[in-house]
Length: 121
Image 1 (spheres, rainbow, N blue to C red):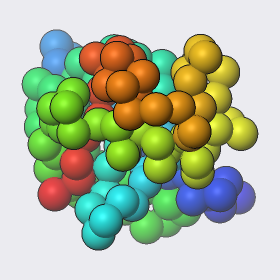
Image 2: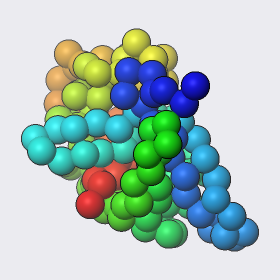
Image 3: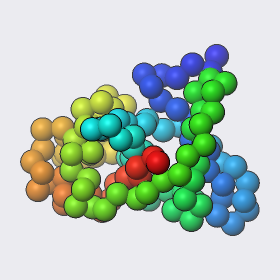
Image 4: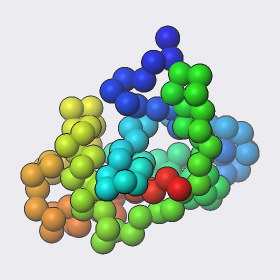
């Protein structure tokens, strides 16, 4: 029916080699007035593609939004990862082995390089 599940969206990004649009479901997150995309599965193809293109498209039903991104440095990720785990652990928690929303900042900083985070601008 095209209705999002708990706020999920469909992310489309141009392929870095083919230039064709590639799509995948994502769980956008709002933290302190900014929106973010987190890759719970690590350095996936959509992550590699968006790093090259710097832009993407989010769709919810028939509504589509074009956007640009900025990659978040590892040292800024702990509060974003914590909020992501609070909101989405029921769906993606299994990808964050031995880490949850109550983990200390030091542990979140330790795993930060494995989980790309992008600010939607």
